[in-house]
Every structure is written in structure tokens, then in C-alpha cells.
Amino acid sequence: MTFINDKKPKDCVYCKAYNVHKDDENYIIYRGKNVFVMLNRYPYSTGHLLIIPYRHVDATEHLSDDEMYELSLSTRDMISILKKTFSPDGFNIGMNLGHEAGAGITDHIHLHIVPRWGGDTNFMTVVARTKVHPTDLEGVYKLLKEHQ
Image (cartoon, rainbow, N blue to C red):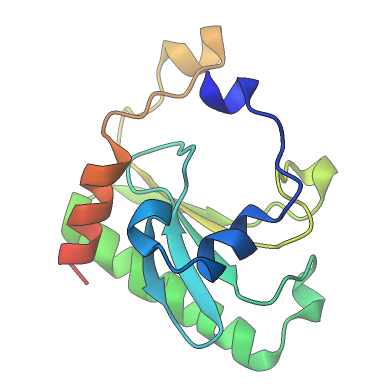
């Protein structure tokens, strides 16, 4: 309900998160040369991660080769950590590019990694349009940091 009732911030939440250097507060689990990884504050499932370039760009074609390469390698590495930590049955990986594609934040691209388990969708999603997140962000953050 907090997410629904919150007003959209004026500043980029991703730029703010990595600039304040309070990784524990912002659930940043990895800082690379060109990208960083953080937990999604409004996850679809336990361990829902975002891989975000430091540079504030709104399209993949604006990323350098080095940024794209690190985005790809970070995706591979985070999947490995999620497998060790939570043993999911599968993953959804992708970007929502543009408002019409479902992006909640359109001006700073980011890649989602959503762990999935057999039977993790239920009547709540269909009937109430509600996502169920079965664990707390602090606990997930600590587990992922331990498994790096």
C-alpha cells in the first residue's frame, strides 16, 4: 500500500541510491565499474534484483559496449548467486523500455531478474491483482550478501 500511495519522486531513485553510498539502506548488493545491483523495493518475488547502469540513460542504444558487457556478466553472476541462495526453479529476465512497455521508471534503464518457483502464481494475482512477497527485504539482502 505504501508503494501505491507514495508520490513519484522528482529525482531519479537509482541515481540517488548509488550516490548516497548507503548500500545497506538501499539494498545495493554489488557495485561494479559500470553497473550496480540492488534489490527491487517492490518485488514480484523473493530475490527480485535490478541491474542498473551508473549512467542515467533511457535506452539500450545509449549504453557503451563496456556497459552492455558488464550488464550481461552481472546478470550471469546474479543468477548464480540467486541459485545458491534461494534455489529457484527458473527466472524471468528483462527490461521494460518505455512507459507503454510497462516501465515504472522510464528515464533510467534497468534490467530485472525475477526468481520463479513452481506454483508461485496463485489466485491473488488473478483475482486481486496483488503480488505476494513472502519474505522481508532485510533478510533477503543479508542472505544475498553472504552468498557473493
